[in-house]
Image (cartoon, rainbow, N blue to C red; front, side, top):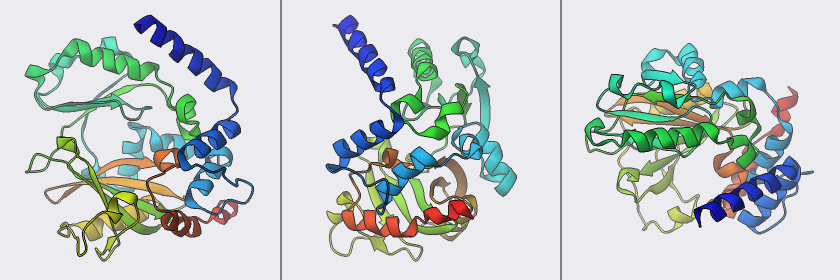
Length: 294
C-alpha cells in the first residue's frame, strides 16, 4: 500500500508540473471557491492575489519569505530585538548536531511551510523521526505545490531557533493584513497548542470584526482583552509592508515582548474559502495593483 501511495504521489507530482502556473491557479481557485476567477479584470482579494502570483516578480520577495534571510531583512529595518534567536542553519540533515541544541527549540525548513518540529523537551524527542521530517522538508518544493513564485528561488535549508511561549503555555499568532503600509486589521490565532485553533479579527481600535466564517459564529458582544503593545505591533506591520501591494505580517507577543514571525504574500495560496464574500470584496478594494506601476 505504501509503495502504491508513493507511486500515486509521484504520478500526481509529474502531472501537476505539466500544468502551467496560470491553469493550475485557475483550477485551484475553482476547486476552493467554486467559481472561475476573472484574472483579466480582478476585483476581489483572492482574484488579485492570484493575479499577483502570476504577474508580480520582485526578487526581494524571495528574501522576505526565506525563514532565515527574512530575519536579517527585518532586523535591518527594526533592529535585532524583534528577532527570535537562531541556533543554526544547515543545508543537510546530516550536519544537524542535536546534542548542541538546547532542551527546547523549534526547527523547520527555510523554504517550506507547515512542516515544523516544536521541541518542548529534547529528552523526549525522537531524533531519528525529527531527522526524517526535516529530510522530507528539504526535498519538498513548495513552489511546485502552490505556484507561489517567491519560493521558487529560496534555497532549501533547515533552521533551528529559540522556543518561545507565553506564561499560559500557548503562543498566540497575530497576523496583520497590510496593503502598501496601511494595516486594515489583525487576525488573532488562539489555542493552537491544544489543537483547537480559533481565528478572530480586530481593527486598530480593537473592535471585533466578523470577517471570516468562524467569526460569524462568535456570540453577540464577543471580544478579547486588548493585548499590551498592540499599537506597536500595528506600527511594525505598517513599516514592514511599505511598498508591497499586499503582505501579511505575522508577529508574536510573548508577555509584552514582540517578535517577528514571518511575511506571507498569498494567505491560503490566494484561494481562501474561509473569508466572507464581503471580506473578499473589502480587501479587494484595498489591494491596489496600480502601486506596481509607481
